Image (tube, rainbow, N blue to C red):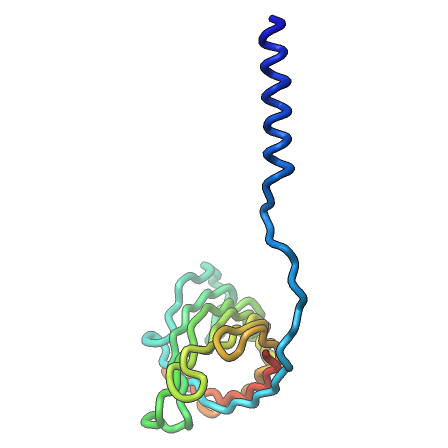
Length: 174
């Protein structure tokens, strides 16, 4: 019994020494932030219902007569283009989800605007916001590290199969 007690105390002392000597963090270094930049972007999103925007889930509500039913979850993968024309240059894509939860077809969206050409190749902007009157930019990667800002949009064309939206982003990033 006495030997077990002695062994227990030795084990406790050894474990406490290990905990004191190990560190899960590195030494602090001074923070030298890069200066903030403001970037304005202008492009167009082209969406084709059933092709680049697909309904994932929808509530079974029979009284809803809206063209965009309440409680609908939509996945999007839309091309970004330089202009509203269908043959304008593709500069990236929009990927994410949109939850249509309002009675007036308003939505909450998590979408990422990714760029695959030009100066911002490999960079993206993350948006998590309700749809009106603009979208909140909550982050980014690549050239848009630590981005914040706003994305204002203007519908150019909306019909049964096609949606073309004009976007004007103002982004502050490092």
